[in-house]
Image (cartoon, rainbow, N blue to C red; front, side):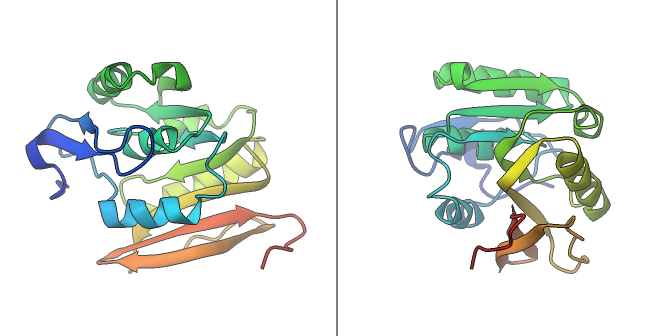
Length: 196
């Protein structure tokens, strides 16, 4: 669905070294970017974790979340996107913003990619088309195949009238909020469950 923040086919970067610069996008009904008010809350939640973090953007689309992470001093972001035209636009934006050296863009299906054994990420963004079944499957593969470590954070967006996901053992909801019809939250992996 189209979003009102698509003014002049641009998304503004909120904060960090790229503050007020823009991500240029094509009008594409496949893109569902995170609203600015939601993005601000998310990055307030992870402000103590973002510096030097290694991030994974599972349904990259415009790259809005991953690029915002780089702007706020993430060390590296892997962007996964299946649509070839969206991938080309994302790469062009990363080059134009001079941050391509902090990124890797992979054109593939995220469900296939995470079925292999991986290397852990600190922060993972999951903002797919609103399909809760896919989110549950992805989180289980991430947990099972070494894409997370003991204190990884996963950000999830879903329609608030959908059933909340069933997090794997040792994961729990750390932060949660709603905006309009969207429920968004962070889940934290903590094998000791000692974070209050």
